[in-house]
Image (tube, rainbow, N blue to C red; front, top):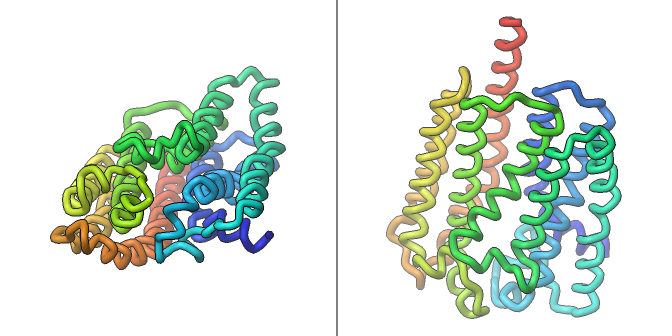
Length: 294
């Protein structure tokens, strides 16, 4: 069961949610170390198990038709008993973490942090849960997916009491557009199995080619927004270029050949790690610059 839960939580994606929270909380400062560590652990594993575990439970029918499922890109939960256990762990594991995080803010009267955390968790559940299934509502699916990754950063900022600025808004906006583009591009490779499974998405509605072009446009827009951030932030605009290039490689793709976009997705995953390393260097530069100015 542990192995099933491990793969269901998408370990290759753990850093995509834990890192934004950690960077936001640490760079803003002022939080006790234990709270930051607790938040990082929460967004590292329980949050991802909730997000992807619930998804695998309710998507099992389409996953059975999807050749890329059954490994690092998602579990295939054909056994009803296994699905029940995965769903139980996905819902219950985050509870003690959420109780402590929300409780810490509540006793201090910091309800904005509680609200952001609630919105983040609602987006996680609503994306896949039967009766809500935001992932089957074109464009809302991409916005909800982006919320999964941006909200940990917003939560870290609000929890630490960061001061809102236009530059910070531009940074979060760029991150949100990146999240939408990534969800759309990821959906292209699943056009055929999603349609066979009766699932709707931006890609099944717009078609593979138009979705690729839209995703590339959103990546480019994210890069442009980064030009409005504080130095050395504008340098991060260059980091959007590899995503645009990787996506546009499939600009002539058709619905019938949409599975070929999986090659782009395989490059997307390591690209995230390289980008994360370069973003870290920029954040260190920003922190040093701010420290020198102070």
